[in-house]
Amino acid sequence: MSATTYDQLDTGADLGPPPRWLLFISGAAWVLLSFVILALDPTSVSTVGILLGIFLFFGAVTEVMQMLLAPGWRWAHGLLAVLFVVTGIGVFASPYQTVGFLALFMGWYLLIKGSFDVFSSIAFRGEIPLWGLGLAVGIGEMLMGLWAIGYPGRSLALLLIWIGVGALLRGIGDIVLGFSSRTEA
Image 1: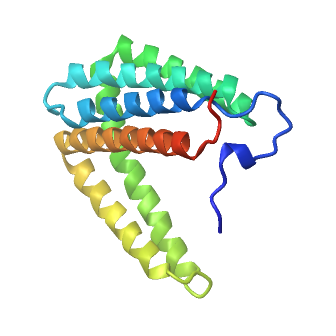
Image 2: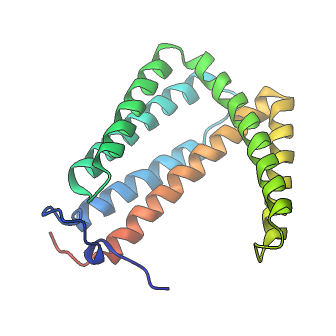
């Protein structure tokens, strides 16, 4: 299996891939944002709420750039940008309630997703070669979800880790994509 770069995709669009420098800047900004989020103290709920709003607005700007420059699925990038802006405005309107809701939502999400992963791993164990790995991940997600739901402080810590690691992975992905792109624009 070979890795596909933007250069190898045939989308029919004349715009081509995003410039390498834009991917590097975007990736570096995401990595920096992830370090700030991962260094936060979960006891400062208002700071977490404000940074979550900034994170959402930064995500909206990134999605608008991808909508304008990336080939294909432009409508999805635009829709996601609008969703990020609306959610960011809601976060700034009430950071305390938003952070509390998102933290509990994260715990319930992990519990439900873990349950589905466990059930699907068992149901398809004859068809999936590494079904045991899916089973172990599902059990881990369920345990982490139960742990987070048990106390809001743990839910908030889990939310910070989830957002910080997500931003870090997004930044690393943009940087890797910048290195794999062959354009000099």
